[in-house]
Image (cartoon, rainbow, N blue to C red):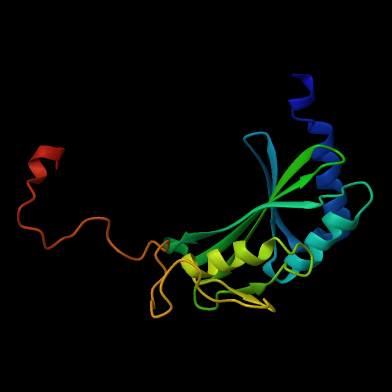
Length: 171
């Protein structure tokens, strides 16, 4: 079981390497569920990801997950990336936020080809456009759809319903 314990020394090494290389392009850092999470400037995402993949002391060679987020109260969208280093058996989470009014960020398909479908899904559900993507189009929703279903833009309940008795739900 010891091989699955979180190496906090490794987290510190990664944070130090990123801070030394990209100090002003990092906007935050936290430990979430024992995984290092770095918040980065959206303009620097591709550069930081290439560094994480190519640096000999890091070697995050596998993009595990790429997904979107929506912060309606801040009028922002975000992208979360999970990377894994097989050599060091270590994971990291990279987050970035972009304005809802200009949902554009660089594609990572040139760094990890596996980003292709994940970016398409994120575009399909959140409307985040990945600049430079080779074939950015909807893959799960119909092409004619204008909305992005994972954005928190619609009420969870139908406010026009007359058959609903809120007293049953403590309201």
